[in-house]
Length: 245
Image (cartoon, rainbow, N blue to C red; front, side, top):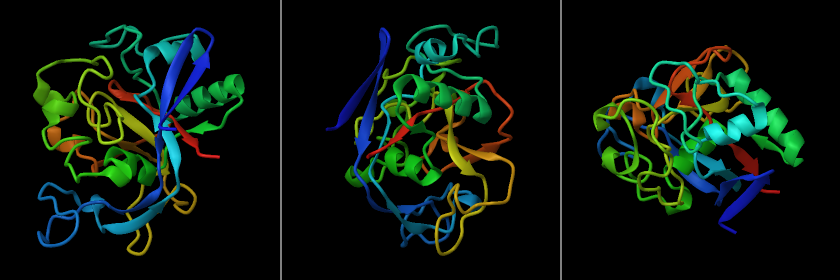
């Protein structure tokens, strides 16, 4: 089953099935003959390494204002600069800690086990999983086809699913809003990609994907960003993950 529909009262949202597999995570800018060469890669995107991913589900779109308000009862972006109120726009101005509260509540309502994706899961899904064509952005080498960013010339949040999906049918993983991941931010290990479970030191949490405020370079699938988990920012939201039980 490629899509899983979840209903909460009169609201529904969809999760996309991501079949597990192995992929090369990260990017490097010094060897054009090696895997994942990208002249724009930053040092913290390296070293590249093969990572095994178990099958899971991930949100077809970022969490929308409609879903957040249905669960939490308020819209965190209301009153913020360039805020656009619409049910089908991504929610933003959400901290990592806010995300966990939202997930705890939606799990109580649905009796499921939603969570934030790990950083390696997020990148795998953004690249198209085992259907990946190796694009620079999620679904294309042309950011204008798949994502909203500063280069698009449109200020503010944009309606989800208004551009093309990636190879798995997932939308908006490049641009629109940065998305929190489960992991504590840290440099990659040379032997194994660090995960939330084994990266024990550090305070900041990982964000991925870029936003409408970002230059295109920050919307690449390997680009990493981080922030304090208690802070919220314009253009920062989340996407749900769900284990494949």
